[in-house]
Image (cartoon, rainbow, N blue to C red; front, side):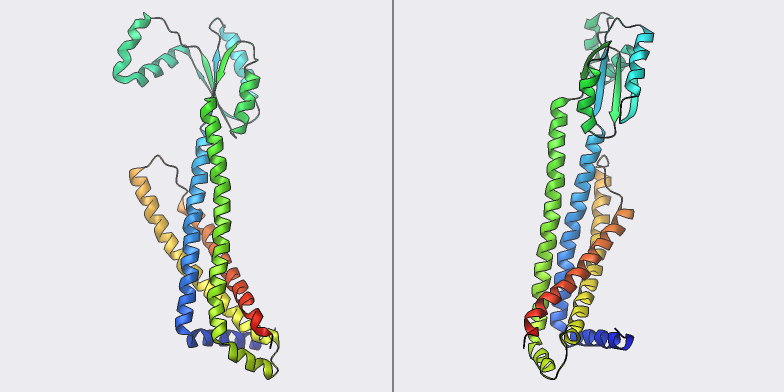
Length: 295
């Protein structure tokens, strides 16, 4: 395509947008609103997935040792644990340290420990953290068979529930985003179809005087791309402000929640919104004009 021809197509697309001002505003508004909703839901899904991953990464395996072990035997168990696949952190908690932590956890009720008469029933233990939660269950089954290990605990019921919840969040989030993307395409294509319908006589005249399908189609495609681009720009700006507001409120009131930082996350999100806006605008225009090309 020659540069002069491309300039003509762009000029025609802009002229069409000016000529159909109200329809152009309606199309841009629809694109912006659709992409804004898509962006907000994407932010929500990404943060829920981040929360789920954070919960999974905090799953720990507590390996309780037998009371009659000597120091070399305790260290031998530690050496075996240190080479476990996927291990990211290992901490040894002695009987005394475990009792101190338990006492702090009791708070004002720590006087209850006086009933122990100085005896410490808590065992020595190793606390393990792994790269992925799937490794926790397999590790627990393996470590239980180690010599000197009394028992292994990792909150089996809680972990299983976390796994189920995170899977639901991830699968549901993907389905929701795909559904919203399809809904956005449907809305935009129908909105642009109204613009094409309003110019159906003009298209018919151009066909009668010998204009090719490509010559007629290109200005509409460019118009769809421009509408999608402008709509995506507006949606991105609104999502930016909304996400800044929400993250600020969450950090002030619920600082313990892991929020995905706005940078570089938003750059990727904005790039995705622009790509969807331009693609949907072009595809919507192509779908809308197809039926009017048969004269």
